Image (cartoon, rainbow, N blue to C red):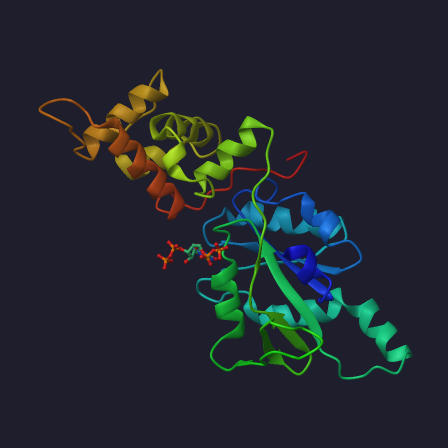
Length: 267
Ligand code: G4P
């Protein structure tokens, strides 16, 4: 469906998760979006470390992308988009002008892996003021376009790209942010993997949140999280699955602080 839709558009707005900007990209998008203008939005920037948000912006800019940090939930960053669209589509707009085509709006599609914030972004970008343009017979049969302003239209169905990974580390990071179904994961193992990353990059986060210290093993740390949160299964038995779920949920919702789990090369 995306291959079909992509033919109709000028601009791909790709959302990535600012906490893992590389692992949350699907490499197929480069192929799919070839010959299209492209914007990369570092979404959920409110949950990511501001120091690394700045570095990731530079990273993408250095590779020629038009990029912006974004909090789709609060609408933060949305105001900068229109200018970025003009920038990303400069060549196309110039080409149109030379051919005498004026006032044709840029057509854009939002793409990204599940849970990265595509629907939230469309809602906050389009806001209440927008009008659905309805079907355009012959041109965009069956497609709904949201007219954002006179120079930009957005396809109202985002393109979903499934995450792709051969590397265990990438899979693990996608699981941390909740882009892989939790039901197929062993939450205690995932929690210990997360503890390992936190110890390396944000060693103060666990002590601050749960009032506990690092131990020799991550399993022991998880046990202490269970104790500190009163996770007991029966009698004195600790409920480690519950503790793991609390840890993952605290991470995903930013209660462990603003955390970035990937660094641009060489950082
Ligand atoms: P998708 O279409 O790409 O699958 O993602 P969707 O918009 O459904 O967003 C997935 C979750 O991420 C939602 O949370 C949404 O509120 C949250 N989200 C989206 N953008 C941001 C952002 O920039 N910052 C933060 N902190 N969260 C964001 P949810 O738990 O499913 O729903 P809700 O409890 O927020 O209503």
